[in-house]
Length: 434
Image (cartoon, rainbow, N blue to C red; front, top):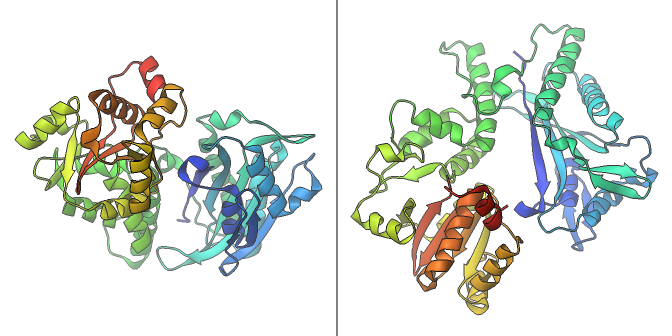
């Protein structure tokens, strides 16, 4: 069966992304970022097959210049945490010729985006899949704002439609199969239930025929892509038969359901950094937040620590801050540092490389509903013993409301507290986090 893969990624400043850099990477080109006065150069990559900008009616002709287009997209966004663009990633069936693959991608993006007034930066690359078969992949980058006479107008509201991604997946499936049938290929693609968020991972074929091995590799790749976006799927599967599991079992599961070293390492980092993961007493086994109450998850030492923090799951770890930072960055999380004063925050920033602020300034901005936490944030607090009880309460409430991770540093020891069910009212959640 031909493979199916379609996913959407948001290019957001809150996680350090930039539309100009994203466009340079997707197009394998060299672009200058006027906002930051830097240059993003990916022109040495040689896997590009096709690249063009699809302009809708009413778009300015100069937007066909990639540098002009994406610098204007960046310039119109004023917020530090703005979502500046979105990127659709799609796998073109390997059974199609290069010409048919380009035609399929153009038809899909023209129908679903350009005819609705959206500019698309369309790029196609060719790379080997999990089974060693070369196939083409589409990266379609597009702005989230409507086009008006003056340039870019208000942000479109249709992105909030929860059914939109399903509609795109269904339409891509139909168009792909149309091209496959026209090419005389009997293998068609399917989106179906496997593409729906929240469902279990795709099962493998049990026989060992060569054809099945290749299909199992593709299934592992698809499962790996799902784990990158939904790491909780691994935790759900690991706790299906037992309330706890070891790290070795977690590694084995992720290894089985990924294809290639890079996908495995990234997926494992996402699973290990999931806010649903709870390390049990002794540090040798794990469970999920919903099941932790059914197993012995605190020893006397961790009980005293949790009492001071309002009955939360706190995990003391022997790993160094450098090791923790490396894992968080692999998982694509944003690190935010906090110090007792502005001076100690900047000293911690120089030492750790984590951009840091003073605790009073941060709490002041939170009270004004500014600089809020996101689920992809790790809030690292240096010299945590110096925090007052009120400050600890605000830190804990904010990370819980955002489902972020709170890390308290006392000397060389790290105490990691995962966000989760808050028990807060909607008004309290709004007050402490976005």
